[in-house]
Length: 498
Image 1 (cartoon, rainbow, N blue to C red):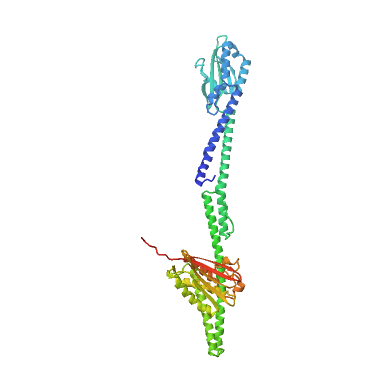
Image 2 (spheres, rainbow, N blue to C red):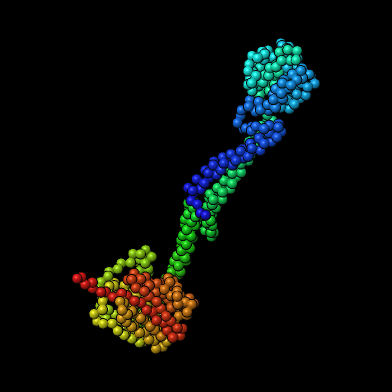
């Protein structure tokens, strides 16, 4: 059962207070009952004796009750025995086991003293004959700092002399049985408290201290830069939730660190690609310019070819720089979009006308197939959508390996969407590379693609633009046959208010 920390505090309070008190009460009751029965058997008592009540006088009084009863019967039958030293020694021996002794007085004379050491200070305080009611259980007398319980029984000797029997109990201390019981209760109480505290400490350690310790270790690992670990979460309480939040923080920190490493790697790769891609056209431009300066372009036709090549290379550099500028805007989510209503048929016809000139120059056949009605409209950014078409077509041209290249653009009506498909008969993409072609800096074959140039971010830009338009893009391909890239955009529909 999962307990909240607040509930655990309540349970801890119960464990440390109610349970020990209950157990101590039960142990005290049990020990008292056991010792009481043992006490009664040891001293042949018939009455119940409450050892734990603290009424010492009552206990000592009941201890000597059998002897009082015996003396009373003896007075009725043979009072002369109370002057018999042998009998009195026997009686006194029995009382000594009950922490009492006997005194016998005849007139004003002390004829038997069972404990002269104590009686010396007590004798003057003993009451006179019939001075007190002999039917009482006894009277308490002070002897200096000591307390004694004195039971007085008055009688007449056979010769008519007045006599008194005194049974004296020293009630200053506790009976040994009571002392033992008190020690047992104290020991039991201490053991109960220690036991319950131990259970509580184990529980608190397991549920509070232990997870806090693991949390401390995890914190030190993160401080030292180690994120490759997992924080175990055992409970579903407040501390468990704290550990859960900490673990989520660790995972996010690790993901952030991995993303940073990947980002740094991609940036280095981007710089490497850009360096290569810029160096190639710059080298070509320098070569052709030097040729013009050295007079190599001796004819107007050759000069025109040199200048056109220089222009194309400079144009490639401009496209590359424009792509990088757009990439930086993607990274900061600051792409400027200007959404307007666009006629699908007119817009894509213009795009195809624009791309067609370049395809004709590269000896690539461009096919355009429009299956959408003239009145179909979408909401899009014309400039960014043109970037999508140009990037996809440029990618097809870049990896075209056929002498007679073919690129087809198809526009279809698919319900609430229009679907644009751009297919080529290039070398195609392997199945293992196909899911990754829209990732930044991904190249299907670095050894072959390095010669083709490009930053590796063209299709990732395409995906970003399409998704920002609320659309979806995907690709299919077969190696050696060609590649098809499709994307869909939602149609614009007028909302008719009634």
